[in-house]
View (cartoon, rainbow, N blue to C red):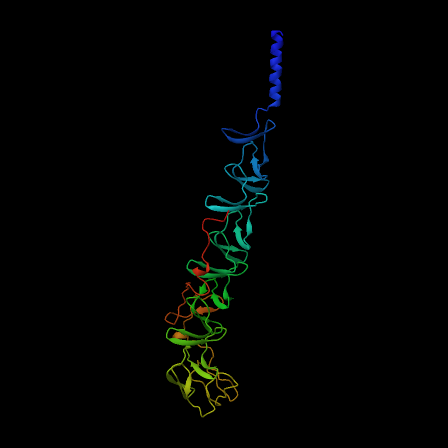
Length: 383
């Protein structure tokens, strides 16, 4: 073979090699970052799906310059987040001090209410318009909601916030007014705070007592300080005669049970034992202590002098009723109404009366640390 023929043969072999083996394939890197080459061409402005040996796929996005995207990227009107390795994230994403949630299905950042189910229970979150997970108080629509440090909404439970207790309904909305939970009734003011101690309805004059240790409204007999009081099944403080199973008691103007004393009631002397039960009085007349129409036939024309102002004038067929509205609060506090009371008309008595208007939490039977009501994780949502 001539020297010229050998040179032609060598050049032909080199050309074949150049065609059959591309110069570039897969991920490449230069000073500006990573890019992807396919069929000897740099991929530009497009999604890239790459599989692994386990049969799962990972998604990347190559920008208009062909370089791999990291961090937040708006594509087609939606926001996506890519890790430092370029892989599109799914689920919870932490960026600085904020948490976001991107759809596990398509990777798009979500906003608004988010419901996540795990182990048979559901948790609710709220993502702001910019995608940030909400914590703390949030006004949504016409209601207030509270979100713990881990982003979960308080749903159908108590939450202690800033030393005060709040109750949230099954829809997560903050509740106000009288609310019953697990057989106990509580009062939440217009701002949602649970109130304790003595309360008075400024519209009806009815007085109530909510236990400072649990917040539960008292019913039946209740010892407060050194005195006994009686509250109806609706929690209203009872005043006047009380007939319980044939035993008669007398609750004075301030609601305290008469015990170990003799009182002049309606012009008649009545004596009461140490346990408060009526023991003697004008038993020979038709005027008997009691509290029902069927068991009481008051003496005609006797006017109550022991009841509040404007006492009832009894007639032969009327019931014994000394329970008209009184301006005297429990413990003898007169004019204790506070302008700080909520719009619903419940107001607290002034200082010096029994109980307290301070909001307290503690280890009551209804709620407290032992029942798991403290906020959960503080390191962000679960991955």
